[in-house]
Image 1: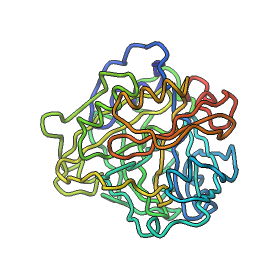
Image 2 (image 1 turned 90 degrees about the horizontal axis):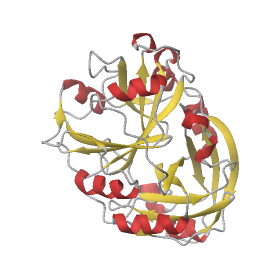
Image 3 (image 1 turned 120 degrees about the vertical axis):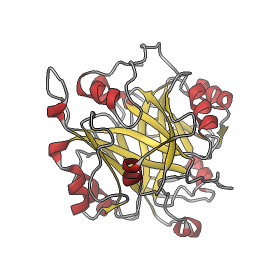
Length: 349
């Protein structure tokens, strides 16, 4: 892995509930070399864009219609899927907003994802506190999930946390970092970044084992193994009374991948995957070195392949699912393609 530097490293070492951990040693190239983007199904592209750009640095870098795709038809479970898509970029990562031309009845009837999941639960925006990103989200129409005020989980760590929902009811997280209280030689290069994409699972041991193989990282950071962590401040952030959680994290070059398991509020794996056209996060697309190697790694880990490879966004990609049914894309694309994770100098640090 590429080593984090500056304020990003400082925050990684104190962040969330996980406490300090020494940076992992750098590793040689792996099959998965970054995150190209996180997919987000929205009801109205213009409204979603106005909401997120009002409080973050997300910038439009690509706009196109996705159609006539056997892969997208396969994962949607119907033919003729058409998506108006816009790709928005932060300092280190990208979110692709997707508006489906004709959402299915099942998608329309699907409820939003709760804090405890299951599935893709949230994207975390980590910002310098003076940006007032959280307050700006609320001013734009966001709604609070837990306590209305941001919560500092640990008095020694100058980070405040909050979950909120966007105008479609999709969950997101904001971390305000008080840079003045960090011991830094130089100020941060970027005031905004995407800290992580998160999934919530009913079985953290199973899903962490899966991603340990997929990401070729046998030693992710973990907390709460002996029953979970809890506390009043955690309840204030999650909005769940008497909450108790187990967590693990992987660093995938430009983005952190977070896994949470609320043992206090158990969820079950759905009998069928969440519809891709239901509002909310619908996929995470990885930048890979080789599609055949990615297929082998996915099946070795215990995942399943759900589409053949096809041309997309100037490259090729196929889709698979993890043991919880979460949709994963594996893409080979030119380094200068809009979707590529290789667009980020120093991984956005």
